[in-house]
Each structure stands twice: as structure tokens, then as C-alpha cells.
Length: 532
Image (tube, rainbow, N blue to C red):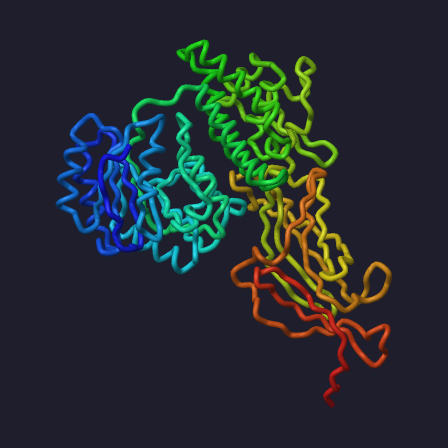
């Protein structure tokens, strides 16, 4: 195992665990880049581990240990099934409050560690994600900006499972986390996933690049091993989380990213060894039949969900067909079918009598997105006047049934009001398709509800029930509004005499919540004196 005798330095801010495996040509540049970190070498602890190199890496590390004696320690392990042993040895020697795992081919931006440590300290984070060059394609959304407090359920942080992150050493030690040594592929995923799930807070440094990743190690894992990784990761998540939405969300990541890619390759790549292909596909079928809940499948892109459904039913040829359809960049646009308030994507095998699949597998109603904006709020006596636009990006504006809904926050009582459509041929969706009947106007009579009485006291939140082609989705009014809309005025408007208190009157005070949503507070007060 380790052949070097090292002595822990005094506690530093961060330990860089640098794995070196036959990377002699990159080593000097890697160490020079760490020495140049603006955090300062007095706050830095670098542990470079020679992972069984057969080139000159070991000799270069020995010389570097003398050149960088102030902050560099060196060790060596016998190369195992994966990089896990080298990473675990470095972790066991870590003297920093935080630790980050890098390969010798990786580079950090000069101020990366300073920014990441500062973010960890400020936000009391257990894990800090530093933006990688170009971002992880699947996790790009999480790196669009800095996030002081997030987790794996409310962001795409879990879609980035590389270990080039800042981990709080104490949290890793309390949780006894280590890289599993029995995995031929994905030990870094297992470690990072466990740490992210365990973290009390995850912070993202996304304003500038922190990590410049080097090329992936040579030699891709075979298909059966990649499928086995999915089973291992699903089991890891299941051991940490009970059944439900949180588990389904994390499971969906492994189904989409790893199992989706592996099964597509097995189905479509001609030069895959037939025995490997068979083992991979049977492994995928076993996973889909025994480890996957419907809630996780519901979170997947519909084409992938259909492919998985066909595989789990034993329809390999049909699964290959839809995988080819998905891979065809020149395929025609997929039509939608709208029935009974639901929207279905008419992918291959939709209502195909030869392969019976449930309609729910093709249901994309939840994917319908509403574009809306409140453009005018005004008063005409006790009438609240609202104007704006709202439409579905994916549906036409025919068969409109949109309504304004006012809901009392405490009781849930509702009042609903029809809207008047106004044609506007300049109104289009993001693709430039017309949504001409998407404009609306309404007059809300606060003095007379459906039962003939005025609105009772309470806080009334305003919603828009957007309905076209029989499909309905509710959105909050106000957060998306025209730039010139006044959000500061809170002048009470007299509504009507209070029906249960003859000496009082009802007044409505409009205001915008902290999230920017429009609400009305209706209350009773003594009438103001009439000026003579």
C-alpha cells in the first residue's frame, strides 16, 4: 500500500488530493498551478498520490516533495480496480478543513480555492460546487449563478457527480464516507452522491470558472459495467432515502444519464460485442423491473420512458426502433394529441395495438408551459381592472376558457371571473408561432361576488387559470409584469359598506408579496370623513 512516511501538517484551509497515474508529462504544470493559488500555500495542503504509475511520475513526485516541502506531501499506492484506493489514502491523510479531489490533468483557476473556501465559510456549506469549464452538460443549470444555499432536491446539483468539489472534511469523517474500492467504474459518483445527500447545505460558485478539467482517462468501461453502475447508484440512493418524490428525483438522474446512454449504445452501436450487448440489455431490464418506481419514470423525457417501457416488457426490437427515432436529428416534428384536458405526444407506439402501452406514458400535460405577463392594474370605483397576456407555449389560443381566480389565503375560499380576449397578431410564442388570442382583460367587482355580497375581509391572492384547447394550468398573477407597472402604491380603495357592521366600510389595499405576486388585503374600517 503506502510506501512513504508522511507527517500531517498543521490544520490548513484546504487539502488538494491530487491523483497521479502515468501523467509525468503533466505533473510539473499541475503542481505549479496549485502553488500559484491566490489562497496562499500557507493555507494549502497538497497530497499527491502516485496511483501505481509505471512512467516517471514517482520520481518527479519525489523531487517535487523537496521543491514544495512547505505544502506538498507525497504517497504511493498499488493501483486497484479504480482510482478509489489513491483517493481514500489522500483522504485519510488530509489536514485541511476542506478537501477537493483532482486528477493531474485538471487545473484550477488561480483564485478558485480562495473563492470556494470563502463561499464554504460564509454559507456554512458541507459541499461547494465550483463551476467547471463549459459546465457539466446535464448540470449546466446549477452553474448559471452563485447559489448560497441549495440541495440535491431543489437544484441540479446532483447531476454533477465528479469529485472536483470542496467537501467539508469533518462531515466526511462524521459520515465515514470513502470511495468504494469494489467498483470498476463510478467510485467517484458513489462518493460524491453520498456526500451531497448527507450535506446540510450545498453552495455553488457559478459566476466564474473554477475547474478546468483534463481529458478523461483512457479506456472506456464496458457496457455491462456501466449498467451495473446504475443498479449500484439506485441502491445507494434507496438506502439513504425513503420511497417518494425525493428518491424518484435522484433515481431519474441515473436512469436518464447512465442507463439512457448505455441502453442507446447497446441498441444502436453496430460494433458492440454481442455478448456484452446481451448482458447490458438484460441488466437494464432487471433494473427497470425491480428497482425503478413509476414516479422516477414519470420524470424522464417521454422518448426515453417509452424506450424503457418497451425494454421492460421484452420488446427489444421496438426499443431499438424508438432509440433510432430519438437519435435521428432529421425526424419530423412529433405531433400532439389533446383529449379531455390532457396532452399526449404521438411518438411511435402511441396507441399501437401491437404493443400495448398506457396513455400515461405519452402524457406531456405537465410539460405545458405558460407565458404570461400582467400589464395593467387600475381601479374604476370598486372595480379592479386587469390587463395582460397569457398562453401556452405549446398550444394554440383557440377554445379559450381563461379566468381570473381570487383565493382567500387563510380559508381557501374562491371567486372566479371571466376574461375578455383581445386579438393581437403580434403576440407569439418563443418559436415565433402566433398566439393572437392570448391577450386578456377583466373587471373584478369587489362589491358583488356570486352570492351578491361584497368580498369579505381577508388576504386575497390573484391567480390566472389559463385554459386553451381544454387544457388548464393556474399561474400566479403579478410576478411577471410589465416594467412600468407600479408596485409601490398601497392606497386603500373603498369597496362597499360592511354588510355585517353598518357603521363600517370595506376597503381593498393592493400590494405585491416578497416574491412579486399581486394580492389584495380587504379589511373593515370606519368611513373617512367627507370633506365639505
